[in-house]
Image (cartoon, rainbow over all chains, first blue to last red; front, side, top):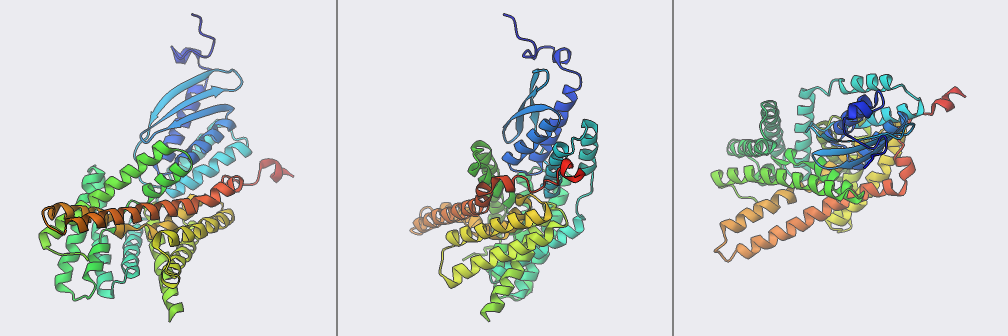
Amino acid sequence: MTIPEGLDNEGETDCLPSGLKEECDFLSEYATRLMGVGVHTSRVIRNTKRIGMALGLEVHISGFHRTLIFTVNEETTGKSRSFVSDIAPLPNNFRLNSELSKLSWQALDEHLEFDEIKKRYWMLVNQPSLNPWLVMLLTALANLSFCALFGGDWAARLMVFADTLAGVLLKRWLTVNGTSAYISFICCSFVASMIVCGLVCIVPTDTAEVALATSVLFLIPGVPLINGFIDIVEGHILNGFSRLTEGALLVLCIAVGLAVTISITKFTIN
Amino acid sequence: MIFMDILTDALFGAMAGIGFGAISNPPVKAFKGIALLAAMGHATRTCLMQGCNMNIASASLVAALLIGWGALLVGKLMRTPMTVLYIPALLPMVPGIYAYKVVLSLLLFFHHINDASASQYMENTIANSLVTFTTIFNLAVGATLPVLINKKTAYSLTRGRKLEETKK
């Protein structure tokens, strides 16, 4: 059987037009980076197609939780290439979500050269994140606010503030040491809730239950839970359920850590 | 007094939105928008739940709709994708307490499986699961609906002026 020119993937380096492999590698890097930093599936697909369009390529993507499957057609020659890329787990990054989306429009509207797109991409990716100490402080204040919203008094709020600082520090240390996210969530939930139980014995408060209940809420994986539902609403149902399953497992881990604290301290929640 | 309560609720909602949003490293310029939307959304939900006796799922839907439309306007002004604004703003409304109570009730159910109280824990598990699931679903649907209605605008919020337009 004769395979039409451009449709065979055997010996792909020979049949590929020059540069297409490099462009495919870039599209793969771009799309998997977006998926990794917590962008919902439809936006990843839209942005990658837009970059492809700017390069004169027609891009088709099938999105899964851990991999993306690409088919890239070069419009001028009709040659195509299909490949699968792994999605590396990365910390959520809304700045990249926003900036890489802008880059896709710039590539299309300003007719950027491929090298210029790559240059701007790596410049954006290598920009520093927010100061981790500032993030830790803001997270602790956020959890303090949560405690306040649930009716905790000032003593309870300060306990939650302290436990969140410790919990975030521990989570960062465990992440740096390559601990599994599930183990990390159990440990952080246990330590954070134990700190509150310890503080309740020292500092008088009328809302100890609220303090304990909110002590672990900084761990709730809100982004995958909301992204999961967005994916489902937008028709990427498999990916949506994958994200929800991951989120539900993390919630389960939080509850396990808390349950261990409760069984050790015999503290009850109403 | 009621006004002060709403203001306090909005303030804590904004703080929670900024703090939980900061974990996901949003663009610095987006913080103002996130704070505004989180404050507006949380205060609205509290007003609906306490003032109109609305349940948490329905109140969350209304608040999320407000956040979604707000994110569309703010996103247009800041050239920022809607999700960057509305996900952190929705985070303070994720029913975390209900989510962990689901598992906690389940654990207590197994702990008391031979007692008469077991059925009560089972009921709590189911009730908390339904509240958690429906509330998060409503939050996501409410915030996404404006995207689905205004696809063209929502999908091009980060677009600058076209090169041709700039040349003119």
